[in-house]
Image 1: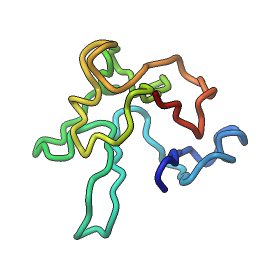
Image 2 (image 1 turned 90 degrees about the vertical axis):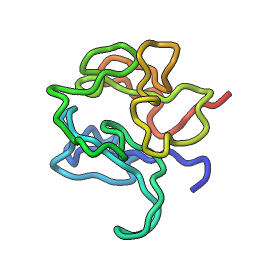
Image 3 (image 1 turned 45 degrees about the vertical axis):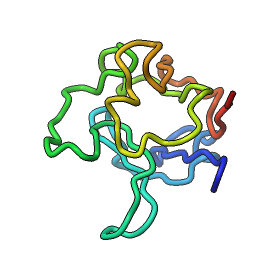
Image 4 (image 1 turned 135 degrees about the horizontal axis):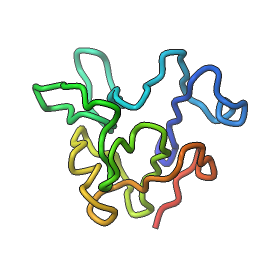
Length: 125
């Protein structure tokens, strides 16, 4: 829904995370798997947001341990990613621009693992 936050969790996560989760599964990413949020069907959809690989790249190579975000190596592994308050929409499949190259030019704030203060909400400017 408009204004909602979509939370994906591992099935054995802390109960406070599972209470907020919209979706959970046992084989959740270890930091090097991309995710896409789409609206529609498998054959007819619109990409709303991605984490990981640009959805339009033909090369879906493994990044190693994780993707770099805001200049932080392997930021998608053992970190918490929070969207910046000035981001009001998904990246439509353009992960590289969304990830940025430093703390100023991307859409994400990289925090330590197990930061849950923003779980289930998104503060916007």
